Image 1 (cartoon, rainbow, N blue to C red):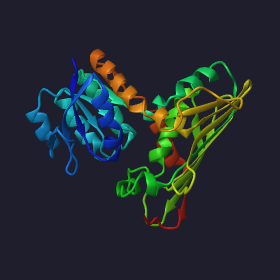
Image 2 (cartoon, rainbow, N blue to C red):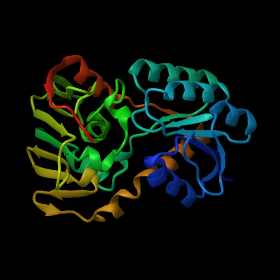
Image 3 (tube, rainbow, N blue to C red):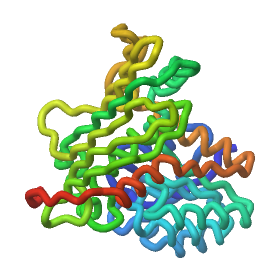
Image 4 (cartoon, one colour):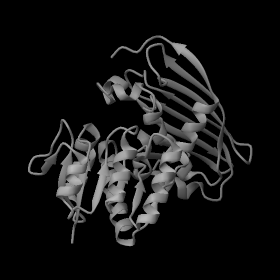
Length: 312
């Protein structure tokens, strides 16, 4: 039997990824949407979240796709109403509220899932398997994209809590924290913040590694032309490059078997929803906050550098 699910926040990511994944899955029935502006053809639409919870007690799962700042109140309301909750990345605006949701879900006996879609890219698991047992020497993240192309009109990104360039950058951090054997932590951070914004448009990070490996990341929202979502790694037994956000993998200069481009990325959200279905059946909780902790540390240690205003 399919679980009935409500999708709250019908924006670009919901239309591009969540809705197709749900429609194609035997585990799910998209039974309602909640949005002030968007809807899905053939699906009951609500403008008010509390009204949906009251009107549709048969909906047992809620997937939240709105920006992170308002998400806590919606997640809390859903949990208190006995619903299982799936959180788009990042899972919240602060670490404290994410811990609060986890404790609340545990007391309520419902499932809670902090999703990291880039961990489900086609070649992340093979990269992790290859790295096992090897000694890391160097890791460089290069995550550069054009914000005007990928986040048009999303002004919330530039407001406090919107993360700025860390909205895509946290995807890279989710991969790094998944594939590395040893935990790392940020040792220095430089945040480039437009004069008219509250969040960074670019960031340069260095990390401390327990075995002394060199680890760094460069995030930039200003990249025109070719876009880069790459993680280059050197070990004592060779090197690998994860590219296209984890969709392709090269080991010692040889491309591994993988679907290229969009085909390789289309499995991310179907796998997330398969994971959520398994969590609901087990009433489990998956709230890995390691990527978000790095972002919080980057802001805590960040040297602020003012740059020219951002104009879309």
